[in-house]
Length: 224
Image (tube, rainbow, N blue to C red; front, side, top):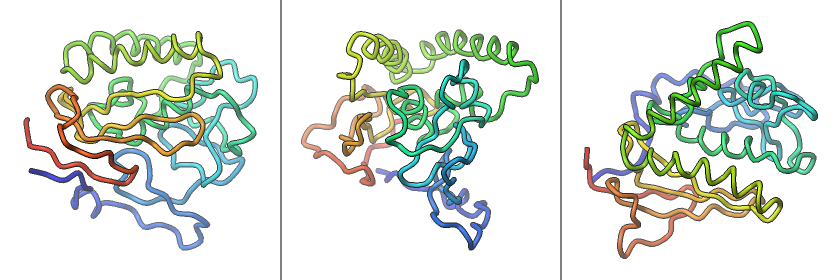
């Protein structure tokens, strides 16, 4: 039996946090280290520190390449009420909570800035990665297979339901393509996340288990 927790070795590698930080939050990635929260108007992206409480990382209004801006750290921390309907931002924020070698970020190469200087090439590079992930997801385990379907369903549901589409679920996968013990829904309207504990093999809820809070932990047998 194991408990989901932060790796002591990773904690030991964390850089110090500046004393003048107004707010300290867990950084993207493994979430082990702490970092200064970014203030309003600060440039941000998928792989940067999180925006401060009450702010979210969103592309600039009218940005023709919002995903490009998020991957390049060219989006901006804005007040939550100033922006509406940024589904892509919420999805990537949810995914970045569990950034590891089995995550969508890693498979797409979004855990680091794109290294090409030409914007058109960058877009084509990202498209190629998206196409490649379609193949990788079907080869790496049951969780990745479900995630592949879920991403398509989110796009379809958002188009058909519009503002009524407020909650979605993305499977939380480990690097082997199996399910992580804790699974959660994501809300677009700020509601508390609904989380539960599952079997690593099939993602089915563990019989008799109760819902867990956003900070709660799940216990699960080691299966791989």
